[in-house]
Length: 409
View 1: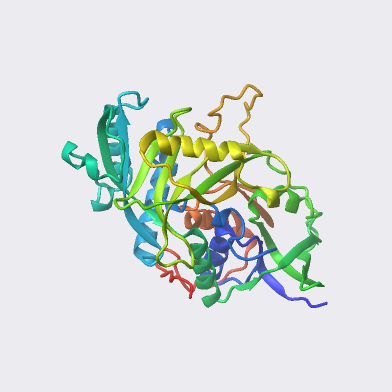
View 2: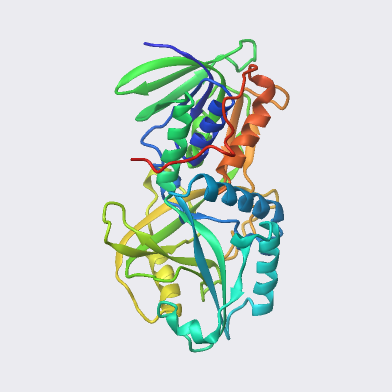
């Protein structure tokens, strides 16, 4: 048995866990991240790989979320040029498209304004003469094509880069580490948590002033192992499947809409890890309610057909599926949730992150529910703000707004 004391112990090595670790280490705190597998082994390696404001969220009035994400996108473009780069996005509008050109133009104007109306937020209407160059996009019934810019990343590499940054500031990482339980602060009569965990078949202990539960779809399972009066947030797990297709997209990313339910589907150029010459197409994502063990999430045949149906609707080619993967989003349940759900039930669901604490004034436990890859740094700042009264006074050693992020070797 061994024991060490930390200001914060963070459970979960996804993008939000490592983001909090970086922010806390930059603020001068002694930090440990525990991860049951390897960094980004869950949702943080199974996203749509986009660093974006979320153009579709404007339709549901989520202006503050879009503004925040566009601000964070600008910081990542500056601080992580090896990992985050701008890509042209194309939105085709056909005669039977639900969203008309005037509506898309209005949305793109607002998107640009929320992003600061700089060079990175400009958009244009693609001239008719260029339509035949757009990677085999069908032109029959095509009425308009809009082009704007957003960014693409390797989500797993970004997660590892943020953790590496945190480690240079003194944060510690323990992978292949299973959190067992925490106790000692259930009556708030002590000044620290007693934490038990298992690594390499041996049980260890440590103590911490604060625990941050950043375990994504496992958040409430982990919360149940902590002796606390904190109530779990009711959540819904939503599966998102992506396909990796043979083929190549030369001009950028295509923002498509499913002909079945008008959900957004992205078709993106993608480079398979370890295959320098093998360019592929990444197609996703779906939104399917998930129940069961998060470790067993996998692409469903119906999801694969749904995605291929969308691709075939817009492009003449029908590429073969090379690989498929699925991840889970954590969506807090709205108060007025009912059982009569439409097929496109998640489109209007609010996507703001929920930060649940055990106590409003002097929190010693915080659980992160939901969250956007793009806004991980802003979320980490909010976490530290909520925990500020419970943390010792320390001198900051860095500012995450300016810390460079390098691609891991």
